[in-house]
Length: 109
Image: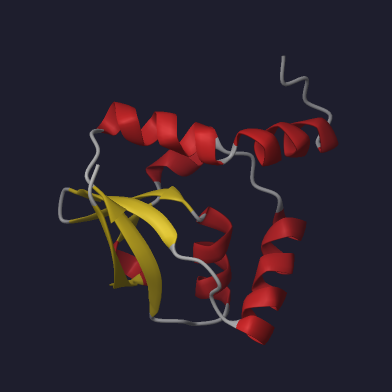
């Protein structure tokens, strides 16, 4: 799995995998505050998809970038197929997603 980091236009991301995530607006605001102070500390993860890039990890960072009116975001591009992208998305977010589900009163089991 080869990868590279590039500056990607924020509007070129396909956010379709976000449907597999629980959106926590409080956490997005925390990331936005951190990015306002420190900038982007780590790249988002995506794969080349159609005419853009399918976001795999970094949804809160992308939403924070939109709120901060940033044009581009650092992104690590992976060469993976759609099934691998879903598996990676779940593995990158396993612990935080399950805690967010717990906080939201959803039984993750």
